[in-house]
Length: 613
Image (cartoon, rainbow, N blue to C red; front, side):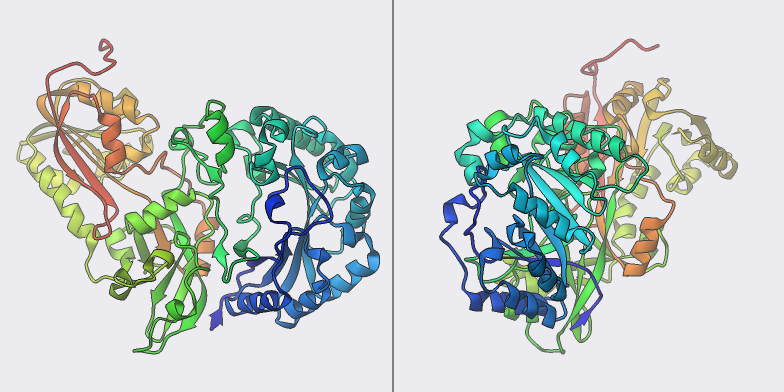
């Protein structure tokens, strides 16, 4: 097995016993369940085999286990770092900390829920505040990653600044505020301890702002939050912190036999969030909170551009000689995230590629990879591929995977196809353009990828072309290259309303800040019987080298898409308009990422038609 040095964590729950009785405890109903020492040994070895660089023990309270030091030594002996999710009580003893540091303790995620003993005790129902504070002092400055997590309930929601005051003198840690999850004790006492999420977000925002101001330019703690929608924390969205932002790849509960990818199934992004520009990294709402209170408190953020692609980079090789059975199926498929990973078949091995993107929500990644099959190998050396037909090679699920009984739980192995799917699918667009006659309005012509096809008809007098482009520089370049055409510098939402026979929105639809307004204006310009042709792309995954992906992400490129609508989403936006569908081409596993909609203008007003200026 070849590893590509990716620092990722495996989380092992050793059991659920604990020496505190937190009101919100996730595992309150399972406190009697402990895994055996032998199974934990095997899970540590499994983490090494899967290529993870750190094992983090959690619970319950993992430091209660008498095997703690032996497990730490076993982890270190296998070349991995060691981490703990803990209430920190045993770490109040300096000799314990020193012994664990010798076994490569590099990460501690520790609980402390108030700035005073009284507040902390009200949540943990034990007199442990002083011990927790001593643990912070013993750990500070000695490990690379120390996070102090404060879970927020109705008991401490108005006292968060006290936590900041307590910890502000420790510059080498992170103070994190986490909304109560309605699970275990949080679900049992939901009506009593779960705070109003808007009130909670205001208090978190105030506490973080207070801490940043108090810290000033001097070294000081970092700040983070979890479980709160970004729209309720303006200006602090980048401080979001969860398992994935901390490089956790997999976890395993005490009663499970193999690792599973970390996930966000406890959280939900309602339909209201679909148009939000911040959707990718945002946690949304805890499902239990949404089911109780709905989504009226959410205020989707729109009008900000977002990415339309993401990177898969190599993490390790799994040997597979020609003719050998699938090693992933034999070894176990569950540790691999179906949406964030894939294998690519090479001659004598299978290479695992993974993405850690935060630009897309997991449901979006699932749609791109598993539903639409829009995964491509980048065969160029460009920071941003600009000639998809030359630069990208489509990958499809291997034939053996399509009929494999393990497929429902497996990320799958992908292989390249010989077809140039981009040129093939684009041929349909060129055929439409060659058949146009009359006045043509091109909304958002950009770099003019289809102007050469229209040029012949224009020179023959069959087409009179006007292109609308908001970028004056691009419009000047297009005018110099295509003197037969007319170009106007304008936003699509301000396009001229003189009658036209055809409107084109070619690869610009998802670049429109307000597509409904732009399309309404375009339809208003169409004569009855005129056509509207919309062509654009869905998001896609790029399989790239780690070096090229890193260079691209450091590069000067900026997001230009406001959404990644497919044909279905665009058709929904056009519902109720005076147009009749002529043709629809959807994206799927056998196609490129380009879709097309063609409509004919019918008689009738727009839904909210306004008088022409």
